[in-house]
Length: 118
Image 1 (cartoon, rainbow, N blue to C red):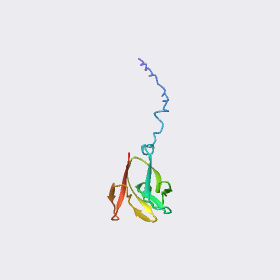
Image 2 (tube, one colour; image 1 turned 90 degrees about the horizontal axis):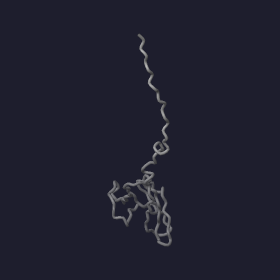
Image 3 (tube, one colour; image 1 turned 135 degrees about the vertical axis):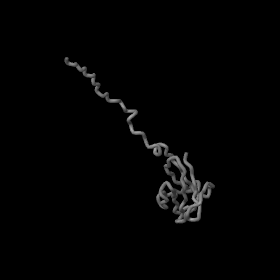
């Protein structure tokens, strides 16, 4: 007696449409980045920079521009949500932000200003 084996129907895999589901999701930090403007009062003609955790404390990475109308220096940095420490560097001298009371002690015996980006 011969047994007959029925072959199961083999379904071919169906290619999924994944334009929405398979697309790479943007990096959450990059997507949530916001423009943050730092300002400080200093005499015209000074070399003024902002340095902090966001630029590896490089004292010349982000130059600030003098705004004659208001008498301040300003620089805009794109930052993801989070908390950042920073300082201004005015003619080579590191200074905490005099208009930001939010500060923490650092290992240099001085203070770093702190900003929270939401």
